[in-house]
Length: 147
Image: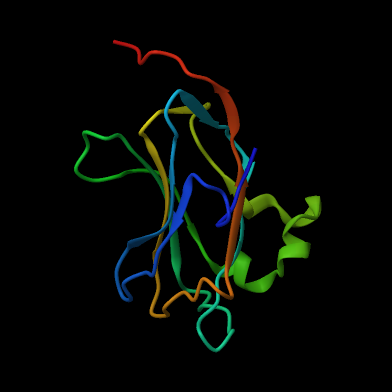
């Protein structure tokens, strides 16, 4: 299942410039389980209000957060540089995907109420009228958390 800014489980928000902040938050709905798989392609085109790409030195963090955690836990971190150099069509070409994949240890289950977060540290403010983020999760039936 593809997640993007139009999906009902997704909330996009303006970043706080100069430090790491949430920009794209997926909340797993009730009675659902989203599985984030290793080497899943993360496609991004982040732009400011002038429709210019954000700076290549920006940093991206993929993190997870349970309802009881105060702060998110980092899953993967990457530079925005490869995203800045490639338009979205080019990011879907297999030869260009090496640095664009989410690296996780195995697969991670996000049960109901858990969050997948894309966080950004940038000097530019993201304008969501001009920006996109897309990636896939596997939607599975709900399961009780392991104890």
